[in-house]
Image (cartoon, rainbow, N blue to C red; front, side, top):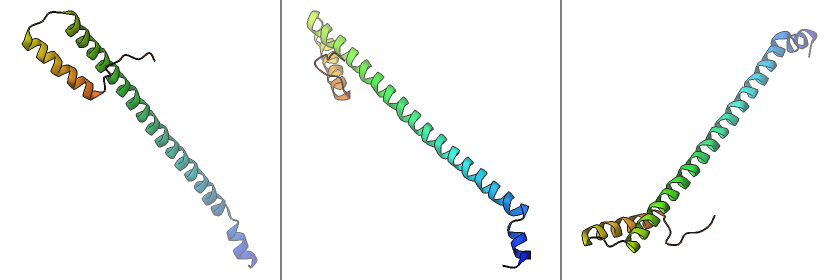
Length: 100
């Protein structure tokens, strides 16, 4: 390389370009990390909401089961409660309580 080309190669424009690329890659890395964090937060929130739903289904299932066992109720009401109990069972309620 002749000295003129060498001077242009190491000029301040080249340094500025390298600095700009480093800034760009740092910004890109931060953006990807933010996206990953956001995705993890969304998954965590979904797991919490699913857990709450399961707990609510379990509580309602237990309440219906106890009500059917302990009370004398009219046949139509009993049938409605049995239907709801079956729906809750399909949604994830368990027939036996477990200690967590």
